[in-house]
Length: 405
View 1 (cartoon, one colour):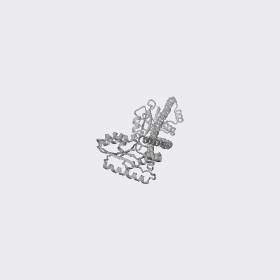
View 2 (tube, one colour):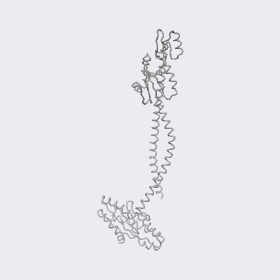
View 3 (cartoon, helix red, strand yellow):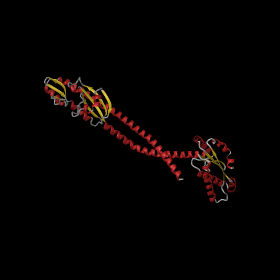
């Protein structure tokens, strides 16, 4: 009984592991598919945001260029120096003296030279975009930061600069993040060649993307914990029904090949198993010994003590036969009180050992039996060589006459 319980638990545990692994794997694939889909969607949104930022900045610059054109035209029409100085003072982007080598030369007339302070303009734009999650860069044609003189973009991001410098517009992803850029040609406006070409660059750093992915995973993992609990419970439920189904299937199969009363094979089950053994024995050229057994006076026991006692005798016989043979041997009930034992790879001298075991167990039963009857068997044996195994069918047909010999 304990071995059956252990076997049932082991089967249930194996089923549970298989179901859990399958469900866990599928849910894991689904989980990462969701993460991947949402992260890719997030990156697409980033690209849209970058395009929006660049478009916005480009329009600001274009508007500023239009303003510069208008201011140049206005200044050129002024007749006195004081009016020019007053105009310059009112406009914070213009100056009469070039204090920085990087400022644009906008207009020069007689002894007055007017500069446009583009660095101040871009620095103010940078402040405007400080709240943006993207990093906004303004670059000249040499890859220098217009709004930051400390670093050189071309040196810091060599691979990215090559792509930016090759196209009017670009959008790509590298190990340094997602980058979008737009090239603006101002050669018809600015006389300083250093700023004829301006590149607007928006970058979402790889660290930002990694943090975003980690946050996404963390948020989904919280949900996935509950999913795992559900998978665990579902696995237990499915495993229970699988084990129950396997048990029912085993019982049905057992009832079709075993004799329910005696525990040995029934006639058809025994013949089917014998057929398998016969092929193996023919191939290995081994012998087989058959025992034909019938119970004496079973009818009288039934009449005197009732069929329940007769059933007990049949069950006891099945137990005695199973305890007397090896696992590789076959015991089956032909019907009524007739039984057959097939001893594989066994000749008659070795078969006598089985005969003595049966006799010994039969004596033990009779010694302990408190009823007036004595349980006895008619037994006979026959040895089959590898070449006479086909005689089994005829022997089965004449089993009753053989056991009574």
